[in-house]
Image (cartoon, rainbow over all chains, first blue to last red):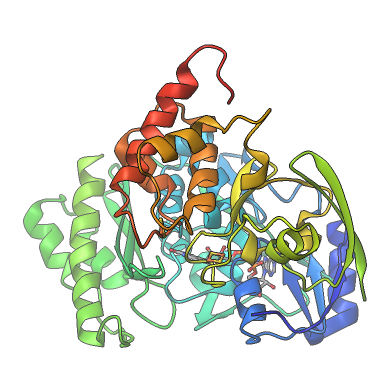
Length: 281
Length: 161
Ligand SMILES: Cc1cc2nc3c(=O)[nH]c(=O)nc-3n(C[C@H](O)[C@H](O)[C@H](O)COP(=O)(O)OP(=O)(O)OC[C@H]3O[C@@H](n4cnc5c(N)ncnc54)[C@H](O)[C@@H]3O)c2cc1C
Ligand code: FES
Ligand code: FES
């Protein structure tokens, strides 16, 4: 399994990378951690003429607190998120989800930005990014743009990112410890058959729920959120709300799980995740 | 178009002109002649190709050599020093951490990385750390024994890390 030949460019700055992207257009592919792109190159599912490696651009890998939010650079690896004391303290959902991504070697290379742009319907991060109401910051020839998570994921492997834009940063809020991620894993690949991320805001009496793996794109389970708004998180209320986790969703069916089973897992994991998050409040 | 790639492999600087599509595992095996790094699945699943890149365990079948340019790689050949096996190698030997040996170089390097930042891992922590390494022979139990045994050896004063 050898990739088809390509030209390799290694910009040193974000500006240079944007210029190269504009210049080479659709014939080029950005390379971050490479853990979605290189497998696709080897299978020749992707055959770009040019690969633009953004791995050497200074200051795309960081986790820092800014204006009451946490900013995570797009090139930050899953591993760095898993190990971040700042996130453990201020946004514990991200390290919790990171532990579920692939294996150590994958986490050492793969990046948060790469995963979000790739938008695999079974990737873990989209569930968390939705539940957290995160924002992504992009940069393109027309300058920066801020996109809300809820409008970022468009469809299977499709996002709101324009072809000449680079994802630069992900911004998440500071949260309490009352968060949880519950995933049913596809053992052979490590990806999610149904992954549910929950953020409980005890004071505001609201919850937010992001679900991945179940449909063509990750989604917010708004029917669950509305049902629980203002309600105490009793076992009965949680069960009644979680029963709506796959309402108005077209679940995917494949050899790993039928559409019906995926919908069942969405409901089950939502109930479990709400229970765990509530117990941490 | 070929580009020049410089990688310090087991302490020795290796320079080769390669096409950008050349994978790190082929750079190591075909150009450096270091065939201890195995190719199992070629699909990032089995971990047989695991090496340390700048101290981190990575799957060399899923990294372009150009991405490792300027970096430092440790392969299984680089672990022994002064004719003496690394404590993790000794422990795999003593605890029957291998049978056919195909997964072993990758298992050992993943374990070395674990012990660098967690010198006393629990069995669960070891299992989490070798989650990306498949073994078709041992059933993993002896591998976990071996990593715990290595941890004890490395805690001895004066032992190589
Ligand atoms: C064996 C294996 C198991 C895995 N298991 C899981 C799992 O359990 N859960 C999970 O969620 N994921 C899993 N993954 C995927 C992994 O998380 C990837 O790291 C991730 O999907 C892609 O990130 P990357 O940095 O490697 O991106 P790359 O592969 O470098 O890029 C992916 C795509 O995004 C584009 N891109 C990358 N960065 C940017 C940017 N900053 N701006 C614009 N475009 C960009 C690239 O052009 C490319 O099209 C697994 C992967 C492997 C190989
Ligand atoms: S050969 Fe690289 S993971 Fe199997
Ligand atoms: S010893 Fe044979 S694959 Fe592990």
